[in-house]
Length: 161
Image (cartoon, rainbow, N blue to C red; front, side, top):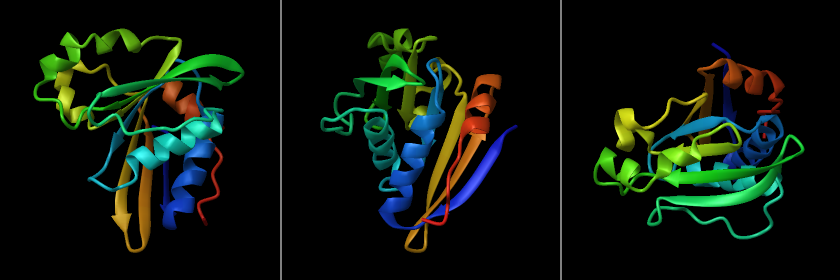
């Protein structure tokens, strides 16, 4: 399993991590984001989307559950779907909303609170854990598939931010 850990100092570290991830991703990747409220999951996703070329506002999909964005990843037009399942009442809501259709070889799915969808959610290629740590955060990335391992092998990040 490909693995990476670092300390992120202040918000600048989380923004740099998002930019580094954007440069390493490829269409077809599924990422699960784990962390308490306020750990930086949406900030990380926002930084990734902006680094991939999205110029507009990136809002937390807390109430809509999913927000799609059209960006360029690895030179290809790609749809990134940002899910926030925190307010989902049951795993069946995931199926009822038709969200499984987004998980395919041409899009990138980033999922906050994946445990809310249980076994109905497709497995991740990469798990990202964000934890509060002093004035900053501690981040851990784990590749859980061959595609995730390829992504983390391309990942270059200077953790001293």
